[in-house]
Image (cartoon, rainbow, N blue to C red; front, side, top):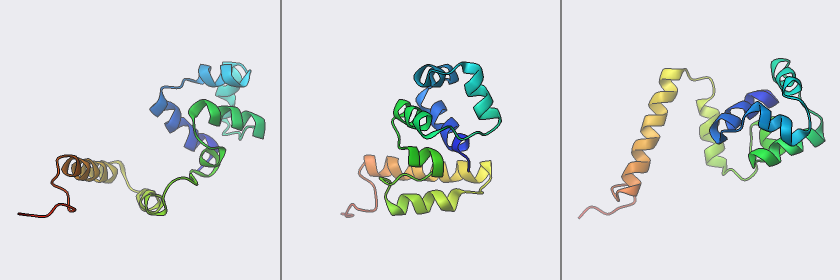
Length: 113
């Protein structure tokens, strides 16, 4: 995955627009649009500014991996790569169900009585 393949979903998730990236880097919105369209990896100083604006590491933007992410979570993400939209929706619903069970106290860590 490219820098922008990793960056655009984070921008969407955090509500950061291309104009916000332009403002934080001191470049025009047109320049940012060109970087994205051409999948250009910005220079290190620009990548640092973008990472700071998104509150993530440059490593995450460049590699898609976060050094703070636990190994098991990285492994799950790797297993999801290449799945289709329907399969990813199924995985998402399963995880939401597990989270709800845990929050409601019905997870696998509870003792049946």
